[in-house]
Image 1 (cartoon, rainbow, N blue to C red):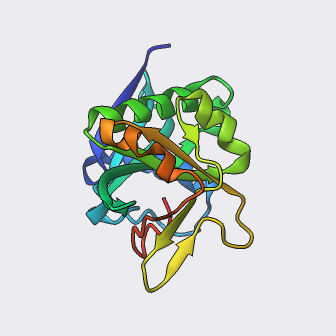
Image 2 (image 1 turned 45 degrees about the horizontal axis):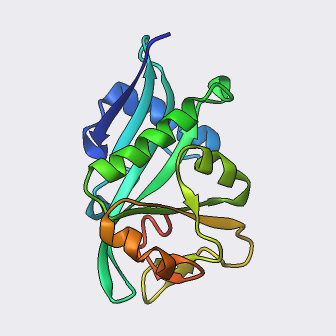
Amino acid sequence: MRIRILSYPEAEVPPELRARVWELQESAWPSGGPDPGLSHDPALDPQSMLLVDEDGRVLAALDLLGKQIAHAGTTFAARGLSSVVTDRAHRGQGHGGRLVAAARRAVQDGGADLGLFTCDRVLRGFYESAGWEPLPGTVLVGGTPQEPFPSDRPGFDKVTMAGFCSKRARAARESFLAARIDLHPGTIDRLW
């Protein structure tokens, strides 16, 4: 089976592919509502990555979000994974891992200083196997400065994952360990 990875700005995903991505997202995180057309704040430059088979079926999908963050006295271009989902019928075949690894390369090739996101603790090994590294004790603070949404809030069992892409991000790696990092992506994507 021939499989390819397609990338689009979220607003430019062809309608037939967007419909399938929405189905996958609804199967993982049911909202009960219709497809809003756009899932993310356009200010975060959402880029959709889709793993598609030769018949045009979307096997896995994710979105990359980005913004400048201030940390340890420096501003970094950060991108993070959001809405990572694999079709239930095709899980266990390496599709999600392949897409998440490709996202890691896209973050680096796209000029970001680092990739930074949270995932459920049980998924840590999955992301590690795709090239991401855990940041023990690190908390991402989402939401807004006025309404923070930290990844260590009660009821969450999250781990922060990273990929240090630029020389200056690699040099600052230690400052990201066991740190509280103000991500503040806003009210739509409270925590990517």
